[in-house]
Image (tube, rainbow, N blue to C red; front, top):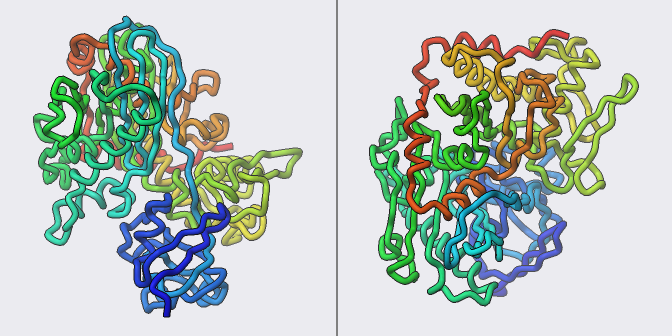
Length: 505
Ligand code: FES
């Protein structure tokens, strides 16, 4: 028996060599495969198809996968070790990471700076020449913490539970240091010329990075520790980085429970805190964050939208990668699906799901309560991809949570949809979603011409912060911003159940 095995990964045609007995999860994770439940054998999100070689079926796989799936070669990557040469196909692959190329006004200063956006799934860093604002290099990675859970609550639970052996904060700090080292090494610039590093991320990433106590984020009212509301300035010694002592490392502050510095950076990026007219910033993800207001007052909230927008917990859901139905268009009483990569469909991603339900509503297949109108149990969009009643329910939960958050903030400001002059959609999903469909299903109840896809506003805001001499602008934003906790809001449940309905045709 050989002590080494080859693993051929398809469709990207990568060949890896690993030791006999290596957990397949460890091998695949570093190649961008996500393990949504942290490998706890609960979610089936790590499904792979074994095309060649032995990867035995375990009782957990028998429980989670159907007989048909097992016979077809489907397995769960978190359920076994490499004991044979394998050829496998992945259900998910290489999500593109959203960076930023926008130009923005700035006051030049000497030296170089690095802006970092730490997402739950991805991390992006850009190196800038601060004398002219040019982005010199970009580096991206999947957040290594994802192997301990796809969403922030899984990570918090892992970190504070007795069996969470890996220090996820140290893991994050080490990964970012490696990412920055690689970033600097792709240029001619010496690490000694990096003067400033600004980091932005959600509240949980901030707590991990800055080594704050995570326990308060694990239960109602999900309040960050007091220090999370301040600008955290670190010397390179604190995260254990090999930068010279003079390099300033700053983590931008949070605005409230689960409204982190990624959203504060989004406010800086969009400039909504300087406008007289009202604007809205929406970051759609497992956790949806919403900010509404103007230069006098900003209200923000976070709402648990669930994973539907990311294609998770959808029967044939997948990330926006090759083989995903990414859009569905209504054409002359029928519809047409577009598949990423143009080949055969393998599943549906979040943008395709929003489109499909929008088209289903228009064609009368789905009614405003979310039910199939003709008693069918599922709708075959494009074989073998179907949408089930439960899939539509998952989308209703997600869209209901976001729309309820928007309604509660509008009510608290005593304004209506008509008072909003601009809506900024932040993040990767916001970049790909069809705005007409989002409006059609009642997710974003704004006129389409007011909705702008604003890209990675967290990274853009962190870049703008690199040029700040002091953080007065940030303090002014904090002064006019109030966090509205939705989990304890008495009106939330009623508004949420109304918002779960789709608009009447
Ligand atoms: S079953 Fe959830 S990651 Fe494998």
